Length: 334
Image (cartoon, rainbow, N blue to C red):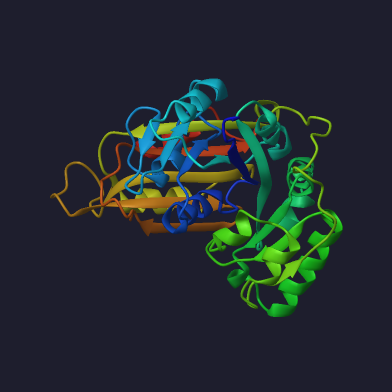
């Protein structure tokens, strides 16, 4: 009897669309034993830390799922998955925000794996602007076109239901072969994610509207490769070894250079303005910037474990960041 193949779901989408939030949602709600491979762009995988407390490149989660990063390449990560004492039923691959998910989906046709679907996240507030941006339009449009299932995320940030309907119509033109669901906070039923057939979508909550088109069997085909992410983007990362004044973090988010596509960080902040002031309470925060939208929120994970490191990573259009800009900001000077 042949060995049962592991179903593969690729999760793609541009920076800040909600891929990590979707992975967390799946890990909390799915009944399947799942392995996750995180492919982050940059020196440090902030997304990996947001999924769970980690040890090395492998994460063992409380629900029995495992997660590993691509620090040593896909082959090594895949070997970690395949060598698990109890093999997973499904493999989620979270693509980098500047990657072509169709190319990653090609791994789903390797021995022992079975490509289920390519799920692409779209930020309802940002995606149309990104798809027309002279610097990133090709990347975003290629990601959308690769989808078997498009998740229009953050629809609650739109001004009206009419705006959401118009955006859905635009997406139908951009990716006519994909099913589409709307979501808030990436809360998509796993029955939809893991079965993108029309029958599965018809059974979803009416709040989750759908658009359906002809779906290519086995996922989107790999088209002409776009330029490598390293040719289009650059990243800077700083590791933080002590708490940072909260005012400095707010200044950072208020003064982002025009070319910044995405900023994400886990930071320990304090209300004091410097090391010579009296000690004050510290707190761990997740900071994010996507386009013109920024946020600071408490770091909360089901595991209750503190972050294993504090760091900030920024991804920007190549040439738009001054040398060591992020390090200078965190050191308290321009």
